[in-house]
Amino acid sequence: MKPNYKKSLKLITLLITSLLIAAVSADVYNYMFLNASIGVEGLPLAWAQGTDSGVTFTPAGATCSISGLQGPAGGTKIYSYAVGLAASAATTFHLRIVSVTGANTSMSSIVVRLYDTTSGDSKGNMTVWTGSAVGSDLTDLQIANGETWRFQWEISWADGAAGSVSVKLKVEIPIP
Image (tube, rainbow, N blue to C red; front, side):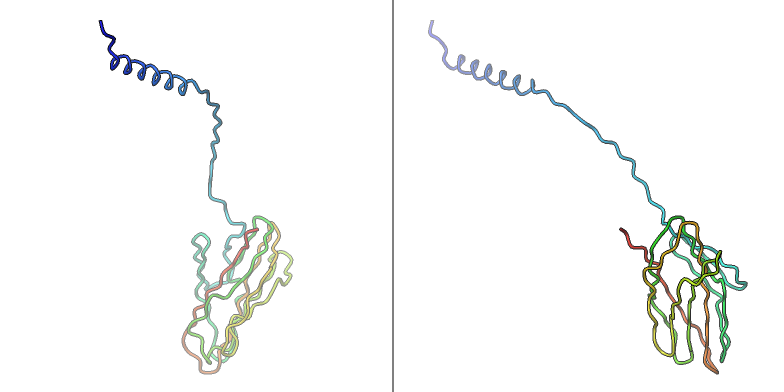
């Protein structure tokens, strides 16, 4: 009988393929696994309700709205504790003026003064609006863990003034 070269070649190819598969399958692997639990970090500052009557306090997470602040035409009205800012950790922050809309020559000034509610110490003053211009930001304010600062608003209108003004301030916490 004649040897069948085609069958022999197929058998040898099949044998070599089997050996290669077996060699590759014989590799040993070591594994390591890492499981992580990830959550949302709370901010070190939170809005606190003030004690002034007539002021509406509406917190919504990191945003707070207050309303009911008014000043008499030709005079000044002071809201000594319109809203507060409480610290759950020592924090450095900036208080920035985002916008002042509706202010005109009838609006004499808007000043925000910051005081520690426990010691009464002044922590900074911000002129939000004066005459006909937006004021300057307060930067690098440092509040200690457990402190609450009150925001005192001083609102002054010119004689015969009418209307309203919208103010947007932003507390900015730099990330180290």
